[in-house]
Image (cartoon, rainbow, N blue to C red; front, side):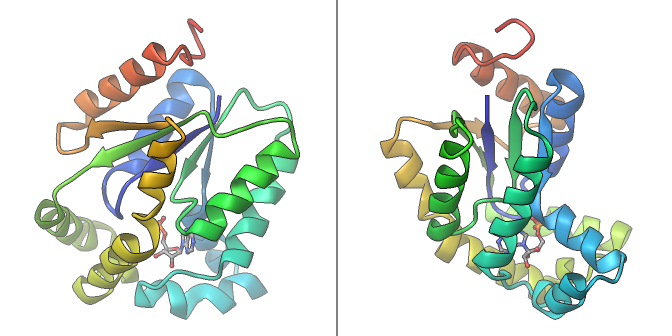
Length: 195
Ligand code: AMP
């Protein structure tokens, strides 16, 4: 069972992915976390993407696709993957389909966390105050929302066409969102624990 958690920055994808990991044993693949780890350990890749990330733009498809393929190969027996913050462009979505198909897998469901942009901006102000992530500053965050609307949102009709898109109210409290995601997965017969 392979799931894409879909939604704009700060919609709560990372929080929900971590809950699915502890509740259902899936493996979270967050390209944002991978890139931040690369920066923190000072690798060549980390240095290359730092300025792009801080500005709120997307790094190249090539870079994130390679990171994802590496993780798929490192975890061949995973019960399922939760893609968090990937794919973000049409070429990334195509590459994911190919990478999974080549390993006898597929994207089973895409769960969209529906959120209100004005509320997101308020949420991110709080996160910036608490965590101080450079790309959470108001200017960079606005750019991330533009990148989402222009480059990532066009994936929604593609997944809808494939019958994989499910929507969950991302404005509800964290536990309610988790429960809604769980219901969607169970209804799709992809509950992991109870099958
Ligand atoms: P995130 O934590 O997922 O919001 O990602 C933080 C930043 O990392 C983004 O604003 C991009 O600069 C970069 N990034 C993460 N995932 C991707 C992706 N799939 N494609 C391109 N850039 C990405």
